[in-house]
Length: 286
Image (cartoon, rainbow, N blue to C red; front, top):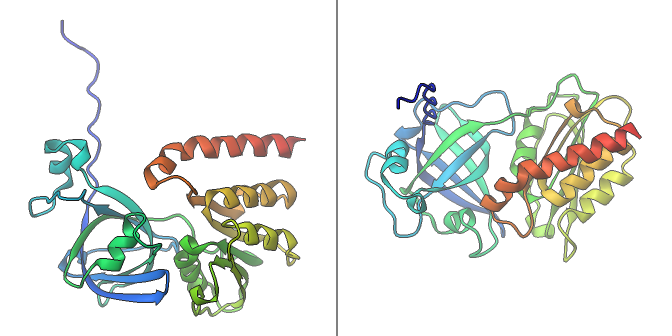
């Protein structure tokens, strides 16, 4: 019997970009900068966002792919356990003249995937990636800006600060392990940057306390709050239900979740967000 149902359209194949490692620099004890270049970046572009990101593709141990790299062929011809694993990283900088892409990695020893790669990678090695994506840039019409995050959000916060116009007002809270993890951040704006040292406290605890205690300047705020999902959730609840900030004035998302690897967090993130939205709606309607 013939099947008269329309064929399901094929999933579009995303374009991959090939980057060659040019330089590796240790910024702090737990932050490593990798600069990519090479002919594969010809035609690469980023737009107006300050939180542009790329999805790096890491082959499983012992797996090599034919050249040129062809993601469509890999997914067609190889079993799923031989497909690359993706990890998402913020574009810290893009230099179109030099065709160099800068990415910063949080490094916590041998745990994880991307951090250990950044620690051992050598100039000349290659990596492929999807992107860029993105969705946030500081609103030039905002009365002031609030930027909050842990180490994972530091590259995006640093890029946002560089993109603020002269005369803009910003309050910035960044939580790191200790003073050795602080970085020099530049901005043409009028910024007040507060480095919060975690010590042995839970991730984000100091950020939640600092934002709750902040005397908000007058006028509409544009807020960027990213990092570990638990503290991001607490601050979203605070900003939405206590400060009554409209959702369009917020860029807020959990980059990662303590106790979950990237795959487990991505698979549960939609449900997590839906639960937050339901809680928010109930609180705002009460």
